Image 1 (spheres, rainbow over the protein chains, first blue to last red):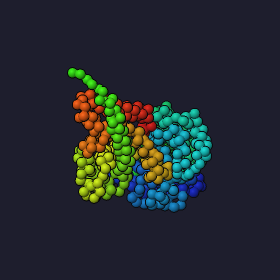
Image 2 (image 1 turned 135 degrees about the vertical axis):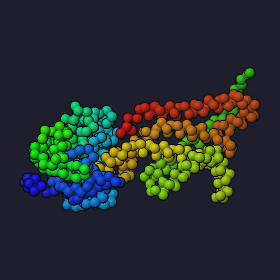
Image 3 (image 1 turned 45 degrees about the vertical axis):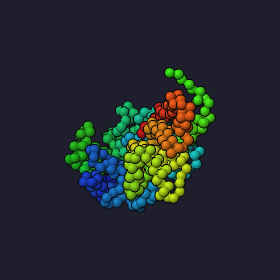
Image 4 (image 1 turned 60 degrees about the vertical axis):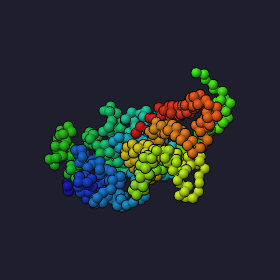
Length: 258
Length: 221
């Protein structure tokens, strides 16, 4: 651990999310079994590991969509607040992108994007629309502004979903397997939007099975197994010199030569 | 057998008045039942557990009692309990609304529950409150999804409005009966009544189906 911590500190950015011994249970099933980890400002952190190892659960706990049963999560220096109203103030500062997009089907692309700024932040409609257009431009879908989600491909829907999350001006973006539900030919366009975002310095926590993306774009990798972080480090270290047997096993399983 | 439709033409004003009563009773009842049923359906999904329990009891009871029995109780029994007698039209309105509301609440509840939880998660993740999520995200989709069943309820409401004739509300059926009795032409008058009910209800169900076919993509999350 000390070796990896040393390398990471060289990045020299303050933590924005800290997980202290986080525990989460669903009935008898322990989804998170004492996760301790840090995400620094401006970092792209990829969470990898087998299905059911707790990656997505950790993400949902990060913006309090799920309540933790033990430990604490610290966001920007303060523990996640209790109570729905206080939690909402924190959620606005985090964007989330879901595996199944979850665009609102009764709204056009641009309405999906400006809905939260108008509803939650009380942004004037005109200002929200300008913002939405700039975000549509960013994800390359200006021409789809007035299309309903049902008329868009999976890749296009996910790019709109990213724009929708960005519209709230988040300080950290949470990606929950953003390409797992996509046709292979549309995965690339979503990953490229995410790479651009990373290039702009957005803090990103990404649960992914796209190993080449994790390797290429992330600053830090956390390997999950059975509700714990079993290994973490710079991508090169994790992919070339994993120390844990189960990390090697997982990487081999997803087709990475170790 | 000879047909003689002249009593209908001779009494058309009287029958028209009955038709207007049928229509106003149906429209008022469906509006009240939609508001009440919508509120009950939402309260059962999102409300506190004790309230959901009370409302479940109401819905189950209302669905177990024939509409006619509800109406008769409302007209003959309820006034004894509260000490004020209700005009027949308003007794029918309350009974019909309470009866239809129970069914609408179940349709609304089913519609809301059919919206997958990811939509709520997405709205919450954007910082929306529970009320904003319900109003802006869940309800609009649920409303689209329940359109076909709601169309059913429209037709059931209009049809059930005819039972108000047992407490002498001068609706279309009641007035048809009076004209039939006076003119000895029940065959013509009641056959026309069948056609009038079809003419009222068919456009309702057809247009909600048409609306649904146009809008269904808006409810497909």
